[in-house]
Length: 269
Image 1: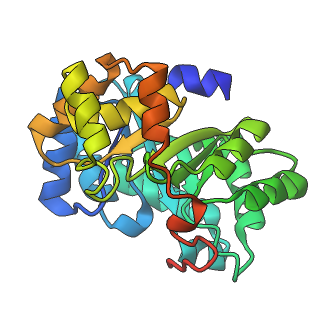
Image 2: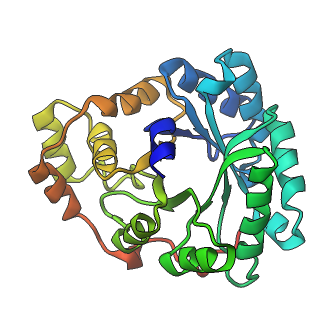
């Protein structure tokens, strides 16, 4: 994990639910603002639009870090390499930086076999790192038992009101880097008087405070915005420093693991 942490940009740009020209414009403006980690997924239906932006941006390939995710249908079929090759074609890339299992889908019980096939794709040079998304601790431990290797990344739903402490402990125990999706919450977090008070005191926006909280936890947030002004504002969270007291105050917003999406019941194909 340590080498990946050194090479992965500290804040990513999310692309869901944008498609077509909207997705292309968003990624182009994000790259112009300074984002170098771009996150998409097969199920988003926007890999081709993201690929257009990557090609048009003109940033050297080795300066970009591109992530996509395998969808449930491709776990069912078992054609993991074919799914990855289709994503690479859509993205107009010959190699991916990070490939994730989007959801564990325990009912179909294919995530260990899928991860094994992803490791083979890594060894074949099609992707640099392989990981997972929305996995719980017992899913991670089973992967290690079944394949002998831990995922490089676990991307989870996380914000100060969903601190995901048990999952992050499992990630840390196994040497898995934590990324967060929906890091700004669904509106209520940014409106919290606690967040607003800290933002006013440190001279930052509420979004910057929340993203700085993620960074202080050693988490890579994947922040989605199509607004160029907000994209720059979010990236500027890298310059925001929170005290231990601020972090503890934000920690107090946690509603517990039961408030997160029930990944055992989620079925996305």
